[in-house]
Image (cartoon, rainbow, N blue to C red; front, side, top):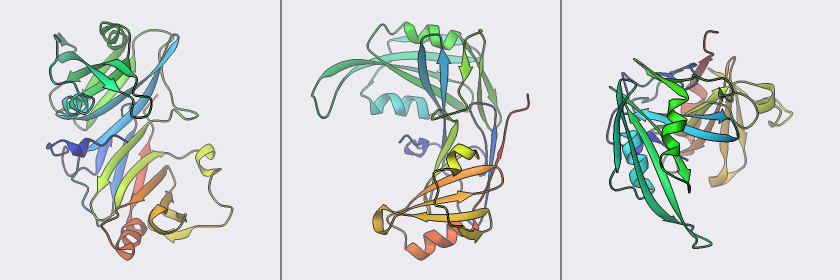
Length: 248
């Protein structure tokens, strides 16, 4: 799970509103601290392959590169109003101990950055991927728009755009657009009435998770282990998430 709050950069504004990488908008409300940065994740389908892109604040891309061992960027280009950098590192599988060369491509604009990673192959393949999408930086986030036919942002199945944010006193919050597919995995009984819809408690003890089903958003919460259970439930009961799809 990738969270931009691992960077030392604050989110734009108070962090309650964010443009998702597919052009949607997420609004959060409640008596909570939403100022931590957020990460937006989307999967983009290219001819013959699928690629995940992550969007965060300006330091997110470089932080992501360091996390996989990239200590320096070997290539740098001016691209789409920002700069595009490529770095590589050898990563070792924790179980098999097999080593693979990983390439990280990072685009940095005025306030946000975009990253994607590939294993094996040539680092220049990342240039080809970025050339097939338009990077539109807005005040509250970055939208990735396909430039060529056969390229599309996935919005169905397992590849749904989502926003991840660490909310102090609550936990890791993941917001996705509400869909029948997501709701079908919930228990048959009703959830607890909450400010943002119905709240479901799944599992017990330290492994329990919370799901908030609203009018437009499906929100998953992995509780903060350092918070009291009552505080987490109170925060979740007061949380409101709204998902607005992009204008066609």
